[in-house]
Length: 178
Image 1 (tube, rainbow, N blue to C red):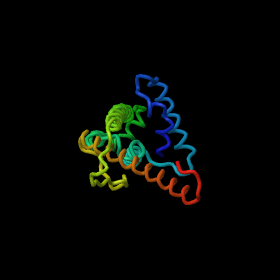
Image 2 (image 1 turned 120 degrees about the horizontal axis):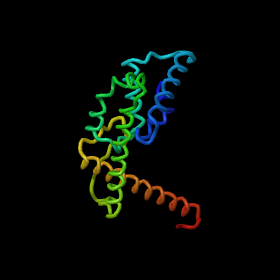
Image 3 (image 1 turned 90 degrees about the vertical axis):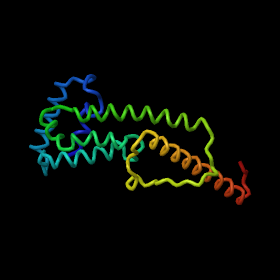
């Protein structure tokens, strides 16, 4: 059922760049086809909306590295409206979520550029939750920037560790140490 949103061009493009009428016809045609030919058609209702909403958010920012908790909260007004938008051939939720995600990705690009411009403090004893299912969406931009700092530091340490292990293995095999 989620696939119908992935096949709609406006699910990823703002409405002003795509013909709205074309998308409405495409959505109607797709829905008619799914309802008539799918081996197990799904009722397009509020339960469908809730499932699609949950899955869409999971796939849009599965690592919780871009969206803020306030973004997710603002999106919740659409949680039971996806079926209505589907039936009407509109994509307000998807257009809004696309715009917000693009904005957050630009902000994240600024975070990592700023963070990588200065050395990490490897003496600080810090912890980071790497399991995104256990991690909540950041509540503020500062919290999100701090998450990025810790993730980048972790990735740097992981790469250093990997390189050191390669050197130790090469040394143990009397190979060239780099």
